Amino acid sequence: MEATPDGSESHREEVLSDRNDRLRDLIRSISHDLRTPLAVAKGNVELARETGDLSRLDSAEQALARATELLDHLALLAKEGEGIHEPDPTDLGSVAEAAWSVVGREEATLSAEVDLVVSADRQRLQQLFENLFDNALTHAGSDVTVTVGSLEGERAGFFVGDDGPGIPEDELTAVFETGYSDDSGGKGFGLAICERIAVAHGWTIGAVERADGGARFEVSDVEVVGR
Picture 1: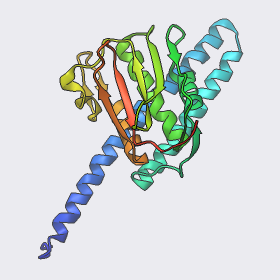
Picture 2 (picture 1 turned 90 degrees about the horizontal axis):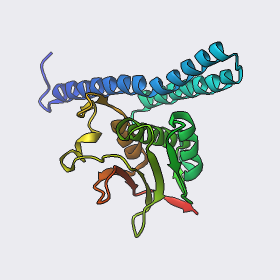
Picture 3 (picture 1 turned 180 degrees about the vertical axis):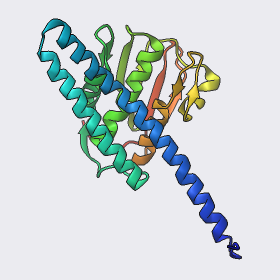
């Protein structure tokens, strides 16, 4: 078939190529985000078997429910491209606590003294927090302190910071690239997922330097609907 004068055939090929790229990214996203709840479920089942503590099965069931929930929402994302559910008034602190209950570790600390109600897809917001928390636990150590707070001044939004080694200045933008690889040798998809979730909401996310060390991610252009 010959390309039409207006280049529509070329445009169609570009669209298909772009869709294939997004599909590959989505497959990586699914693999990345399912790993944590499945690992939690596996660990709790093993502990239940070893100790006879059947309450561990409740934790495993919750983790598997979260994995199912992620599959449902990722399938929606694949179907609708940038799709999120209709945003609702969402308490930021409670979502942060829910995310920490999934990925947090006993020796780590979460400080989420934030009093904001924002317009958001709650499940997507929790996914964003889970990935930011997991990033801190991976790079700052298992005893990290993670802080969630409100942005001050005219910028409406929130931040997630940690007391780890921080991010080199020349990598503050690169960390959001799909498949970004740092000195640890790991392939990063979590922050790329965070950026996609933020963009789907119309938010802006960025990594910033901290004079006192540690990593800090700021999410701005957020619609705050209450405190």
